[in-house]
Each structure stands twice: as C-alpha cells, then as structure tokens.
Length: 390
Length: 154
Image 1 (cartoon, rainbow over the protein chains, first blue to last red):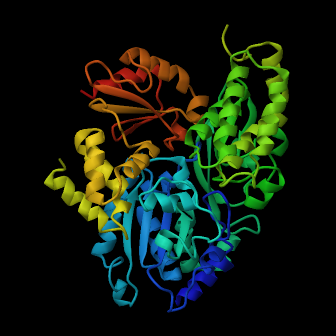
Image 2: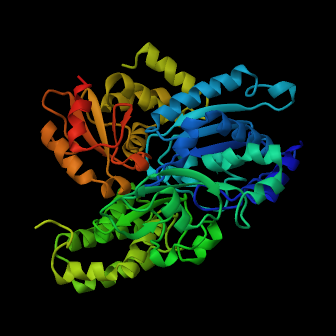
Image 3: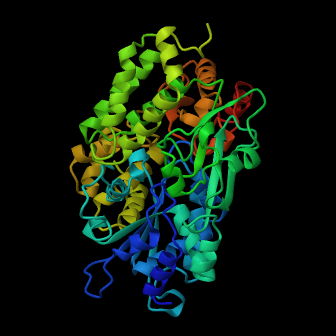
C-alpha cells in the first residue's frame, strides 16, 4: 500500500481520535505536507501521557499488548512518511515502560524499525520519551514543548503541529488507543471497521468505570454502547449500600450526566448532544454516600495544581473556584458564592483561555451546579458539609 | 561533578533529539536516579553540559512533578489523590499513612526511610485507592494492608 492509500483507509474507517477530543484521525494526517520538497524530518508523537483523572485505558493497552501499539505507530508513521517517532509515556507507568522498551528492542531486532524496514525504502527511528510529569504534557502543543525539553506550556495555533510541530517540522500527535486501531483497519478494511460500531463513528472503544460500582474495570465494546449497558451489565451496577447519583462519562474534564441520560449511546456525537463529552470513555461514578461538592473540589484542586500559569483566567479562575468550594465544604459558604462559581464556570468556557485545560475544568463545575444544585444549597443553609461526620 | 557514567547516559539521550536542550528532562532524571534528587549544584553542572542557561533549566525542573529539587528519603511513596481514589477512600488512607509515618504530605521520616508525596491519577482507577512506592504500583489499598506493604521497603 502506498502512504496515501493508508491515509484513505483510515479516513474511510471514520476513526475518531480516542484521546478525548474525537478529531478524525485520517483527516489529521491529511494536513501533513507529503511532497518530496518538504524540508527536514517529519515526526509522529504517540501520546501515552494518560493523566486525565479516572482514565486507565491506555495503560492497559500498553501493558497488555505493546506490540499492537508499535505496529499502529509504524503504520501511522509510514502513512505520513515520518522519519522519527517519539513515544511519550508518563513516568508513573513503570510496567508499561519496561514492556515497551522490550517490545521496541524486539522490533529493531526483527528489522521492523530502523533503516530500510523489511527491505523497503522506508526507514524509521522510534524513541521512548519518559515524561517529567505534568497534566499539561497531554495537551498536543504542550507535549511538543515537553519533548523539546521545555516547560509544557501550550503553543499558539495556528500554525498547527501538522505543518510546524517539533523543532518547527511537520508533526502528528496521536493517542495510544487511536493508533492501536490502525493495524486492524489496514488488515481488515474500512468497511469491516465501521461495521463494528452501533453508530456512524467507526470501531470499538475501550470503556471503563471506576467509583463505587460492583465491578470496576475496562471493556472493549462497540462504539455507541449505551451508558445503561455499561453501568448495569459490565460494571454490575452499584456496590451494595451505595446508590447512583451521576457520573462523568469520560474523565475529570467532562460534564456530569445523571439517571436522565442512561439511555444515550456512548459515542462522540451522542454524548455531546446530551451536553457532555465522551472524552476518554472511562466513566467516574458518583454515589450517594460521597458529597458532590467534595468531588468537584477534588477535581478543581487537580486542575488548579496542574494549570501551567500561562494565562490568567485559568490560574486565577481555578484558584478562586478552589477557594469558594473549600469555603462551602468548611461551612463558610454564602448564597452569592454559588453565583460566583457559576460565573467562573462560564468565564472558563472555550474561547476564553489559551488551551483546553480550563474549559475542561469548567465542565464538571458548571454541570454539578446544575444537576446537584440542592446539594450546594444545603452546604450554605446548614453551614457545613452534610456528608461530613459530626 | 557529573560522573563519567552520567555524562555518557546524557550524551546517549541527547543524540535522540534535534537539540541538546531537549535532553534536559532525561538528564535531570539520570542524575536523580543516582542521587535521589537534583541539587542547585547539579542544575548548574547540567546546564553547562547541555549548553543552556541554569535559570532556564531550573524553570524546567520546577515545572515537572517527578523532578525532585529537595532531598527525599530512601523510598518515595506517591499516593494518588485524584477523583476515583477520593471516591474510594483516599483521605482516610492518607491520614492513616501520615500517622504511621509521623509526617504529612511532602515530609520525610526522621530516619530518612520514606518521603510521602501526593500524585495525580495513577491510572489504576478500577483498583482504587492506589499508590506508588518507588517504581512499584500498589492497588486496592486500605488501612489494614498498608503496614505490610511498607515493611517490604527498608
């Protein structure tokens, strides 16, 4: 297959990026200049910086089948005619690092990496980059800065990485799960892949559930499996003694969904239509014995700590949100604090900040204020957290 | 002074990037693996070796969670404080650990055996609560199981 044919197959498969944003993977590749005149090397970056709280699918893929990921990365690199792959892995994933190191050595040993792969004219180097550790590294342009040995602040777009990425050269950043789909699309074809799902978006998805469900775990299922099936059949419902209150469908930076939403299909378009995001597809379940305000405080503390400080709405807004939520939890909350939190959630919406960190932080905050309003108001009225022991 | 081994390892990393500076994080980790942490003196030496300003390297060091700019104990405990662990009992677990060790988050025990740090989601949410001790992931933790785990680290 020519590189162009690989790109076409993946575009026809309708593979949406599995890192969280759901951008069309084939389309992403198509922005890379392919003419011979392209100056300097081209890069593929594998995003294995799974730091979205509540997400654990990429770790399972890298630990369980590192060869599948390498195969996907090599094919993707071929499709865009990249010269070098950087596999960006978070430091904390030690077992994945050991297994990937071994698999990379095996791939070089078998002539699947290096000069003239399998006697072809295509050469490719692949390096494992172990992160210094920061949520911002997961942001596409922050990751490029991290690989260049800088602080992982986001870069201004345009120019987009596909034309000016690592050291100013064309670069594609693809998520681990996205790339794990690629070998199967090439082996079996775009039609086969599209038919795997229940919806227009192609393929399967690694879904997961954590929190007080009976059987926390991760499952590969057709894209478009309903929330109800995931929760009731695969996660086995709630643990005895706990009742369901709501969930974040795809990691910390997604809007809460409630019992009203259980019949939605878990694909990018359907979850967005329901007012949230599929994100990483690994849901976090809130139970009735955990305080919604306390949960949101935990989330906002994470985002405030991980904010890079580059733009004011993010670092200032998140710090203020944490202070207000701490006040509510400590029994110092006032009625006007809820309006202030709502205004912060609106201020941190997309378009007001440099990257997606703050808008992601605003999603659980704004949606919790809508769905769990009464719980917030009780904190003010009773001047304490109703879940705290007295 | 950077040792011969340290310099050799850093050179090998630097060869994998377009610029020497790109090896900054790898270089600090190479030093940290041997010395436990990255001192002011190490920052100055590494910056000279990587041909970049020390102030710039320090700003990179302070950005990343896993680069330690202060001494740590022989073993580093990193307890996950993110949402799935919070839902399944991170706070009582953290308090139990702090009592057992006699130090709070960020502290090192008087005998230099343990440093206790918080860490963002370890990606073990289906087996929460979780912590790392050095490079080992421990999951499904409760107050009763912690003591036996710590006993393995002398």
